[in-house]
Length: 321
Image (cartoon, rainbow, N blue to C red; front, side, top):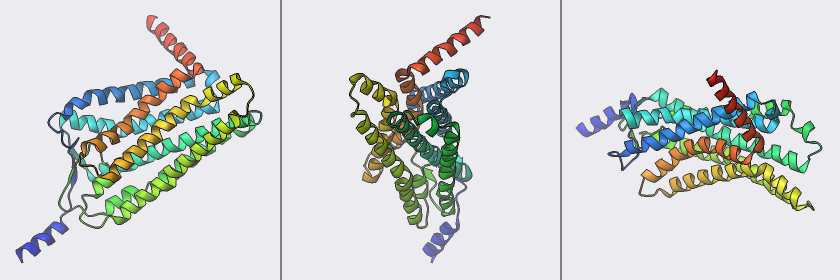
């Protein structure tokens, strides 16, 4: 009788907050990870802000390819800022508590920004496909109106399709456990604490992965297959080299983004016995791409390097005055 009453009382109890425990298995020395993570975050913020300022300042960079890069930089800043301040607060100040609304908001923001990054990569792949395979028609295909339309489409697609993720998570009943073995609120990490059935949460998460990320990845690689097929038909070695160089930086970032995403997904599905590894990879996958993207473009794109030099030299001259 007492046991039955205890179970009933627990089922009626609803936790008021979650506790982010940090990196599982290394709680005693996890604060040492805060330094490299903070440096990655500062690098992501500084480099992406520099890209935004440079493209805005340089009229020669007011082209569709760089407009997509501006959107990517904005998304990268949003993604890193969604998770890193809370992670650093957990590691530095032991501020582990997070309210349920804050947690569900973070789930929505992370999913939305991640899907938007995938969508922007698809747009950039289409842009490179049109530029290389249809160079004469490119100015009439990829116009400013085209950039605005596809950007709005990506925003609407991801912001609307991601709404059910936190809504479904909020509908679950959290009656006993509230400690999350993670640095951030991940959808499956949070819903695994629920006392009721979470089949619909898992199903929708899987459906999103296939519908959004799966279709984006398939179309991106299809675009590059067509690009490579078209480039190999060129008779001049110099023309082949020039064509491949125009999309090499984009291809590097795409391979890293989707490879890391697949590795993280496989590790989660494999349910390995060292939970620290998937948590660390999940965090790094959210902060390394925002820090890496600007550096790859800066190293591989001459126009952007020149723009950086002009902006930085302008800043130095202003500081001297």
